[in-house]
Length: 96
Image (cartoon, rainbow, N blue to C red; front, side, top):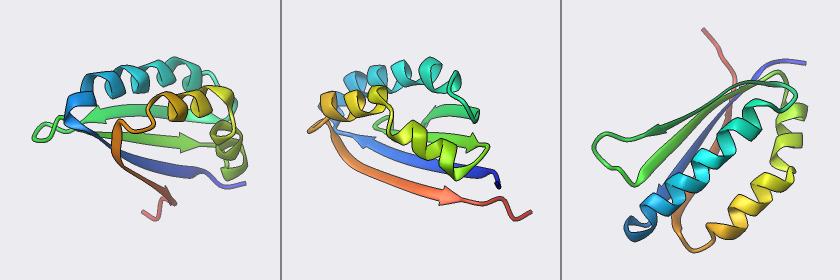
């Protein structure tokens, strides 16, 4: 098993920014308690407050996939449907 880094880029619709931010913040304590989570850090862009970025590290891709199938993440996707302009997910490996 090798460590997996995930970068998730979320762009909220301007009028839904605070709602999306609140929903993203709800994910943090739940996810940080999940098996295999090393870190789960949410950032908000200084120039574009509609842009949020999660930087995550997981013990393995398998444990991250368990996270992706959890009910709290499905609920987040359901309640924010239509409030997010863009969602890009990158699975990455540390190389240096």
